[in-house]
Length: 414
Image 1: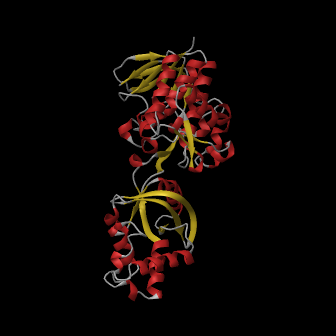
Image 2: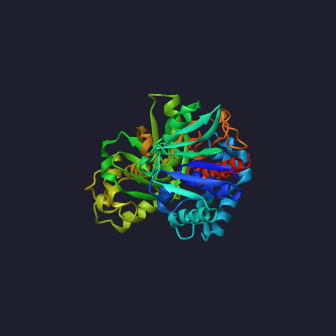
Image 3: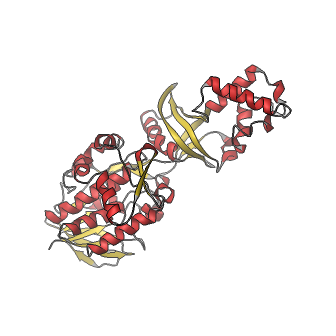
């Protein structure tokens, strides 16, 4: 019976352990945190966006960071496979906007619990609170790992599934890159992917904590719209965050990389469902309703309270002016700010605050059909430690599950 050691108990590591055990291996799973699946437990605001129901080509398209590398992995273990796996272990799922798949319970911990059950069924030895110093080798092939307490775990194969360098509090502190580099692998420089954005406007603090739904955000560069997304966003003390901002951050980071020092803007349309004509009529209707009130007290039905003074100020309007005195030109300026609330992006937050890390083990040094190293015999990779990163919507977790499954299967059968 093959002895396999898996380093990392996140989405990819747990999936690799389940897969390897299903294919007849004796598996030991080492996780340096006190519990498994810490990052899985907080994904999707604690709801866990498991996968996406899109077809294979669409999934690959939504993983712009080397998505084509996981073609074989997706073929072997795709979105329906992870859904079926969870159903089998008692976690029912539902599909939401954009094809995103969540547990019916809206509780990410149910997903982790399903994996715990599967690991127990597969008689996987799970050791938590156990860090790993390095991968052991002899004559170019893996012989096991050396743990942080100097205990050696012998193995016929090792699967490195330590995650990226984002959210270090969950255990993803970049250990895998160090271990991969120690045995000869190239590390593509790390950078944040799916990360909040910092803005230059000093009044951003007035909006801190405000969450918006059903808005459109657009990336503007050199006067052109480079990307946009519709959904939810959040204002922070330093700038912008939330699902649609995280999705757009990859494009922003790309522009910063290729055009350093150039100005990048984010425009927010607070009422994307309304045409200019309909929005104007809506504003006029509110003005009629509140005709005896000042402008600052007449927009409560149209805008969140925190945004009212900001929008009025940006439109260069007098907040104390009574609405029946507002001119057509002033109304147009108000409308312009509602549909084009603009922010100057000054940078991204650090890798440690990113949802996903871009960069990692170079894909050219990994066999995409098996996830085995082309440099070290018996060493396999899975998940975010590989240079793979995608957009929000369940695509990153699917990549973790797919690469984890094929790594476990390949390691057991090699």
